Every structure is written in structure tokens, then in C-alpha cells.
Length: 110
Image (cartoon, rainbow, N blue to C red; front, side):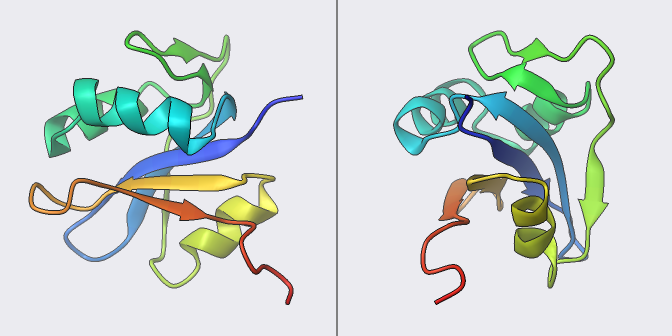
């Protein structure tokens, strides 16, 4: 069973454009890869535009028939990806903040 996550970047209008990633979504795996290899707006865009991923690595493995990135309203992005079964969300905010991790299961439903 995979640790599912969503990876994306924040648009100027506050929405988040993101894709699903099926395996190894835990922070100790993904944050080092994201911060070392995709640590810019351009890097984040290039990472997610091919579509849904099987796994994240220096060279990500994309699904055979990937769905394209989705743009979600900023007020519902966490709920959307939680409903998709994701446990973690990674959003590149801007060049000052970089990658921000959200645990989608932390305190959910309490």
C-alpha cells in the first residue's frame, strides 16, 4: 500500500495546481527530493505538468496514462486531496517560503 500525497504549487490568485502521487508520500522521503531538485516555481511547474505520478524521485515516475494537474480553489484544496485518499500535501508557495508540507490526516475529524 502506498503513502499517497499531492504535490503542487500556489498560483498568483491563491489557487493550487497539483497532482496525485501514489507511493512514498511521507515527508522524510519527499521533502529532501522536492527541496534539492525542484526548489523553484519553474521546478514545481515542470514537476507536476506531466500529470499524476507513481512515485517521486530525482526523475519522477509518471503514471502510464496520467491525469493532468488539477487547479483547486484555495479554500478547498486540503479537503479535495483528502477526499482523493491523500495523506500529505506539498505546495510550493513562492521563492521565499519554498515547499510547505501539510499532514492531511493530522487532527482530521476530531
